[in-house]
Every structure is written in structure tokens, then in C-alpha cells.
Amino acid sequence: MTSQQQRRQYLIDHLQTERVNELHVKPEPIPDDEAGQRRLLHRLFNLREPAPASRQFIKIQDQYLDHLIHEKPIIQKADLTAVRPKIYLWRGDLTQLAVAAIVNPANSRMLGCFIPNHHCLDNQIHTKAGIQLRLADQQAMGDETVEAVGNAKITPGFNLPAANVIHTVGPVIIHQVTPLRRELLAKSYRSCMTLATKKGLSEIAFCCISTGEFRFPHDLAAQIAIKTVTDFLRDQPQAPDVIFAVNNETDYELYQQSLERKRS
Image (cartoon, rainbow, N blue to C red; front, side, top):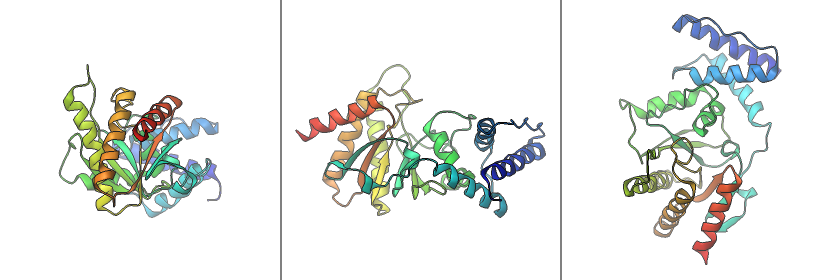
């Protein structure tokens, strides 16, 4: 198969057939336009339970995702400028970073987001990595069904530019930020740093853990992230370089201001 349209059609047909055979549901209508087909394939990826697939499926999926990811520039640490020793700040799409590891803000099941076409980063990471990531998540969990808040696990990145994905469950804010929730957020950052250091990774790129669907205030989360990482780097000189990867101007300014205060 030489075109993205042919690959997309194959993947949609295969995933639809899986759902018909296993769940006895009717196949969804395939839109005529490319955007609609992309949304449908994204939806089918999101809905699929962790399970192996044929070599043919994996080959075509990997080719499709490689083309999809390369529609936007791939960013390496060498493209960035350190704002402090071993610390970088970058605004952009975390899934486009070709680094040793990116951090996924996971939910407690650790299997990725099953909500079709959801905008969360967990969904984006699993969609672009391919179906192999959800299966690797399940294998990493073993007999566990729920991951404790503040813990972290590592898997390969598969089709992502990043070599690895470190998954951590941040705290959810229901009414207010308690001291326990602050400590659990700090624990998530420490767990990721500890795991990356243990694995000998050269760098780790953090998203803004818990600030999306989990509703942690952005300004406080930035302060906790920077303090926790700075303290870890001070105590562990062999720790990997850190990239704070934010996706909007508000978070970029919060991190920039906080990092400048730390330096002064």
C-alpha cells in the first residue's frame, strides 16, 4: 500500500471487522472526506481494547502513523535552548518530541483514554503511538487493575518520536487543593524522575501533569513541578535533563516566570 488513503481504508476496515466479530455491533458508515475518515480511524483506535494484532495490521498502521506524525516538524533536545542548567522550556506538541522519554498524564487504569476523539493528552499519545502501547500498558500493569496516584511506569514509545513513555497518575482536584494533593503531584514528578534516572535516560519531557481533566490549578502546578524537579536535579546530578513541554501561552508564561524567579 503506497498511499495514506489506502492505509487508512485498510485500518478502518480491519478495526470495524474486529468490532463486528467480537462485539456484534454494526460497522459505522465511512465518511467520503479525508477529515471524516481520520476522525473515524481515531475513534476506532480509541475504542479498541488491549490485544495483539496481525503483522500485516501492525506494518500498515506503523506506516500510516509515521506519515501522520511527520506532517508536523519533529523536535529534538538539540533544537531547544536551556533556560537553566539541565532544564528546558518548550511550547508545542509533546507527541512531536524525539527524546528519551515523554510523560503521559495517565488515568488510574493505565490503559489510555477510551473516549473516542477526546482532546486529552493521554488520548493523543496512545493514538499516535499505535495499538501496541495499550497492550504494553496492560503488560506493565500485570495483575494490577488500578495504579496508585503518584506512581509511574515506563513503556516503549512505539510509533512516537519519543523512545519511551513514562506514565504517571496525578491527583484529581474535586473541590480544593489540599496538602495531600500537593504532595501527590510532587510525588508524580519524583516518580518519573526516579524511573528515568534508574533507566539511564538522557532526557525526560514533562507535560503539565493534572492540569487538564484533573483540574489542578495551573499556577500552583507549575510551582510544584519546578521545585520538585529542581530539588531532584540538585540531589541527583546523574539525573536526566528535563524539558517542560507546555501547549499554550498561559502555561509557558507561568513556567517562564517561575523559572526566572528560581534563578534570581
